[in-house]
Amino acid sequence: MALAVVALCMLATPALAEPPSARDIDKLIAELASEDFGAREAAADELTSIGLPALAALEIAAAQPGLEQRIRSRRIAGLIREQDLKRRLDAFLSGQDKADDYALPGWTRFKKSYGDDNQTRALFVEMLRADPNLLGAIEAGPRPAAEAVAQQAAQLQQSLQFGIQQQLSAGQLAACLFVAAEADVALSSTAMSLLYSQCQQQPHRDVIVSGSRGGLPRKMLGSIVRRSDDATAYMAMQLSNQLNLPEGIVPALKILENKTTVRSSYYTATALVTVARTKDKAHLPLVESLLKDNKTVSQTQINGGALIQLQVRDAALAAAILLSDQELKDYFDFTGKSQPTDPQSILLNPTLIGFKADDDRAAVFKKWEVYQARRAAEGGGRAANAAPASP
Image (cartoon, rainbow, N blue to C red; front, top):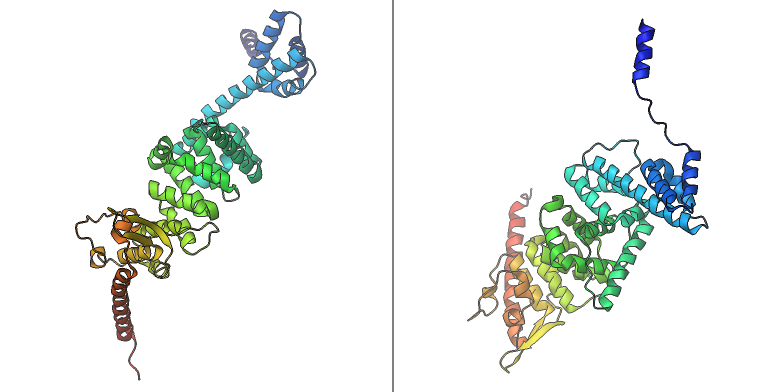
């Protein structure tokens, strides 16, 4: 009786379709070159439905001499890859990706740097859909990745030369930031500069500044800024000032410490702005080391009167005053002038902290010397009070 029941169940259950054999796939690929249009279309549809098992044979056929077979094989292989990627991305976003499913390019690196949660996965999928080639390059290694970013930068540069304002999508920008932020990827100064230029454009600034995408683009950009030097240090610092990135202090200190090959008095003054914004007194000795730098930052002439000149030492003095919690009006003449609160509006403004004559400058700097002497005396007094009594 039991055997009969099993037999009946076997008869009632429809037979499962067997997967196509390699011979079946080869036969269908051969049909792609058929003289019958209907046969070619039917073979293409069936190969597409077979999917991944047919991919390897299609890739071989895509390199064969026959034009019709080659073109169709290439197109079908592309469709299969798109379908497979969509399947894997859907599973990836839902957290149902299998451990034995071959990994998405770049995900291992991305997960190590930024974690694995719903927000990181969503951003990674956005990046992969926007620029799969770049993530494939980082999977191949740091050098191919750097070359891929450089190639993209070159295309952007070329479009600018032809007067075309080409812009990366948000996903492309995030992919570039991810690759550029990897410690072992060394980008050229040209590629880095163009990447910073893209970040300055308003739609991209919104992507970086807003809390969307888990703040990851902002974190990536911060990592890149910290590594900027030489020709890109100033751009990194300027962008950080615009986007309020605390990492901007790193290239600013490189500029002030003369650790960059590209230097100018204006760069130095802008670095002083960055330092003053931190309100960190630990930077005061470095700022004071510039109090004798008489290189000109800018100058202006008001109403045909005397020339007002702003030097590096003037900006350094103003920065030192701010860092030491003193009032600028106790040093500079603000009569009839409103004092701004942002260091950039102060330290780069010759009408506020510039001088018409060196005698005027010397009188103001004398006040700082008096403050320094008082500070040294107070420091010495504290040290004496803290010292143990002599036996």
